[in-house]
Image (cartoon, rainbow, N blue to C red; front, side, top):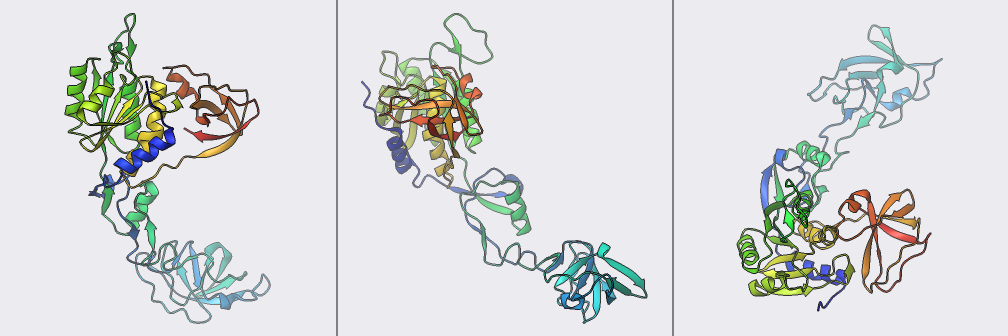
Length: 400
């Protein structure tokens, strides 16, 4: 008989027990940092950009020199030089003068605006006419406008994307501190299982969970080490678990978690370490095991692929992120059910839906039908004390 607890309580236990002190750092080259989680705050050591520069091809001017100019009374300024790309501009900008500046070029210290080239007219002899005034700061990026020296731009725990790599490059960072990728062991057990590439005989099913969990682990910057299918026999499964736990930070075993005669995981976890939880008040996923072996988290996931998917998403994913200094950010929106949904199991229930605008169409799902998750793009949870929801009910939907 399972002694179930709420899944939220299980999540708190997992994070409290296994995320503290689990994170460790390494330094990688910038080219290998994308997708990893930053291991320290990044602070600018200099102003960025380090000089005032133009955003257009045009003329650096003093905006005061163009006050009141118009089509009938243009301002006439004298061109005194040209800014050269890649060099500081030290040409004095005296009242009544202008300096040509290419896009991205430095402007003279006295300039407070740049006028686009097409808004000027060459009168010859170095004289240029301007027919419209320019506001102070027009077409300029000022020193430190992107980043000020001492400003923190990237926080520890942020997953680095392409823009972040660009920011690090702009700051001159070639080596980046990141959290080490957790190692996650994966085992599937069940005498009915065969590898995905094999033809099926009567009574057999393909091993969905190994490939699904490997993909899920990789999506969260962890490294999967899979033993594939281990037969549903105590000694074989115990040996596989005891060997793999030495290599990894987290162990996932799908199948054999209930209380049947052939369900060996409860006894194996108890023999190797300690069972912390056996049973969750949730559907699907009731026979989930959470254990500790050698100070490491062991998850006994249901063999049902839909249940394994949800338990990974709700319990394992937050742990993997916490081990990398990050937190789960679940995107939730409100939507109305397009049809009624029943639930009278006395436990929370994950309901898959197809979200379209502000409408949520429940996706019929039965045990083991992983394709139903592919058809869905979100889910919501019915509380354990609620017997279903009517058509039109407003629910908080979490995007997958």
